Length: 374
Image (cartoon, rainbow, N blue to C red; front, side):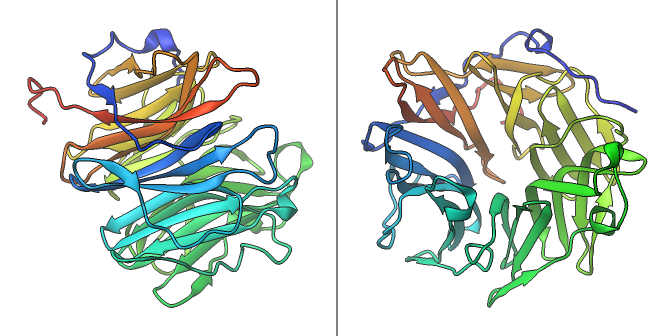
């Protein structure tokens, strides 16, 4: 079974405009970007990124940024003193009193970049030491999730898969599934390899991750599942393809969506996975599901145009609204509240400057009153 890649033309006629720009506090220039967003409920959401970054001074500019939504306004969160330049890239939460962010320092090489993790307990933000953050590690953290008092961080350290679990007191390292580390060669004679790009936890013993893998007889997108005792690979019926999942979402372990670039979209129901045809064919940066289980995904085109698309028997989408003075826009993250129609998407607009500068963008979803699902 193979997934059929779609194209922008395969997306159905645009839905009525249900997304609009949100008002943000004034951010420091010349460049600001929002990289991720999490929505807990109608009055609690967080978006992360950076401000004050200068492309002319990439290694010593950029201030990590956290914005907080109170149901009415977005404002800067009161962070502890941060003495490093860089950005926050990931945010996750399972309640208003358990919010986590992951970021990294700026640096000319991966060896000089340090991972930082902060946690908000509902009152103050504190940094949580991360064993993979420094000390010779070249850690690329790609996924963060929180559930039931446990926090998971995934990524890659060169060819090694990173899976770290915070149990409330300390970090615990997990080995990757056996196929990813068993001796042998994949296609082309290279060693067995897996990458992990996203993760979603429902309970401490029910966690899903997404990415890809390659070993003798298999090459393609993969899911990974933790059942409380070990991680295993889960195929989705696609093999012998140079493709990978980039994002993962769902309301439960029995209702999953995984997407990847080039029209790769898979729906999982009760352990059975079905590729969904004609998904948007650009770069799919993120996906979320609303309270009805309907997926929403972010597509970025090579022409620096962003689309917000959803699926209800067929794909439908519309261009994301961008600032009138922008010459392009890319969205990086999207999030829906579990029991509220509240949704947000974040990214940055490209400005008509030389050199090109970016301005952070945050879009909010306005439910269609004629839509019975809301």
